[in-house]
Image (cartoon, helix red, strand yellow):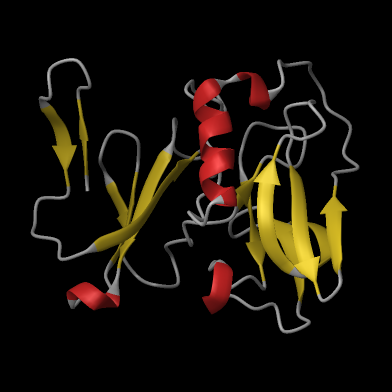
Amino acid sequence: MSVVDARTGELIWGIGHTTYHVGDGMVADFDPEHPGLECFASEDRKGGSTDKYLLTADGKKLNTTHEEVPGCCNWVWWDADLLRETFRGDDNRWGASSSSDGRSQSIWKWQGEILTEGIEGDIVLIADRDGDWREEVITALPGELRIYRTNVPARDRRVTLMQDPLYRSYVLHRSMGYPQAPVPSYYLGEK
């Protein structure tokens, strides 16, 4: 797990030790106490480790305990600020290994307030379908699809996220079985 300069390949920061199989990773601005995107990842037990990592944008380690490092898959821009939210009650998996088992999920600020309750079904897609830069959550239940939309009014206007080619590519990848929340090619977070 590292950050490198895309132009030169030079290492900007790394975690400083051997990893075994980092199977999941994500960047999202969800912690207002640290500027920029937080970087987090978890190792896959197939590689012999279940370590997790949470770092600031500049590489400062914030946490490595399982309870303090969020899951990597399901993140959503839901309310009117630029911090990303995640799901409580979600196992943060996708596909055959994921099952809501009738559990109701909530969208919440990481280690903060619950914003929306009653999201039911397996999450199959998170994307800015409606075009107001916040995302909709599509879930599946036996015999039905549900689309959940935020009821929080936006405080500003932005170009729809689907206009960004990288964001669209992430949406497409998820529809093909790669369960990462989509990210844009530009910084979208708190200043």
